[in-house]
Image (tube, rainbow, N blue to C red; front, side):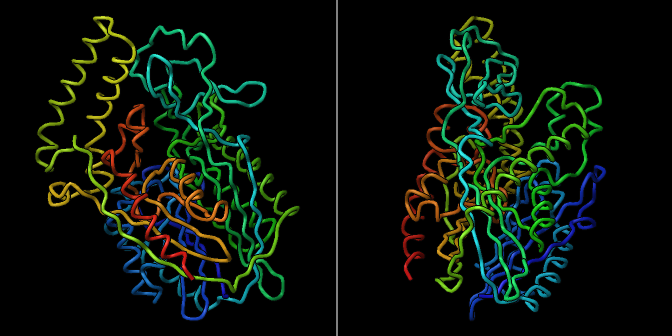
Length: 482
């Protein structure tokens, strides 16, 4: 097995609209064994349209000789980073050229390696599930402003941070703390690759939580917050820098499925960019020191000469029935649908309807306003794709050193992580989020029933995630055969 690491700056590939607090990077790890080659690219971006992400894969494959199905375009969903149209067209042309140049250098300098890994269990210490069912109301999502009790358990009684559009229900459930204790993903990993001289070539780390801390000020209500935005690689970037300082080489961070997962971040007093930046550094130090301490104590060598293979699977996922069948219909009907949804909501509140009915109308109001964003800005769907009622998503798979890495589309929920681990190789399965383009939230049947942010930001039909799981059972089953 040979490996090499690389890193490029994204400065100059896209037109900046904010000042830079930190640089934004693409970080690469290249693996080679015999005639099999694979590369994972992890970008400090918020979300690239799937067509552009897959163009990166296709053109980089042609420029480097690495098979397209063995190239991963992974994004960390950094909130203080470019998104969608900002990465389309000429910016992607520049990113492809810069990436291919660095990857070709990496191929030429790949070295035989050994690899050591630590499987760390963070428990509920560092992250939590930000969705919960509130009795008499329904499912709510809390982005930020969570409270923590003496044992560190997340809870809230604050109706104003639950995305209720100003509605403040008078319910007994709010008389005591509402704990956000649904499942999260406690697993963190650190891989360290060393050459025959014992020198570190690079590290690969993985956890699962939103890197949305560098923009925490946007949810604070001070008048200057629109002027506080800076590009920032958030806590994963600071953590990667700490690993590079400690171990050497380039450090690549991979983010796991985190649509419903949040770091245990602060809120009070985070009014300015400098405050949010300080919180990013605090979390990076906390996570990095915990993971590296576990590595230094518990790391073990893995067999780099075991099965090594990579493949990408295409799966057609049904579109939710409330999404129009053409762009013209979407543009023409959205204002009317938004007005009707708002009118129903206002009427229900005025008439004192039960809270659970008002909550569903709140979700409906959010929902109709979010559909254009998902269809046009995120997915960039055509009339033909809308009429087909299906969207093709890609799932990437990589086997290395006894581990199965699975790259899933969009913002998947922790449900996907738990299912993959139970279906295949337990903690040896490492799910990675947002691979090969941003597909918005991949809502499960449960999240659609409960409502909340995941429900109204998703384009998938109720049978969408079951369809992916059903297809993957056979596809990954075959992939796991030696």
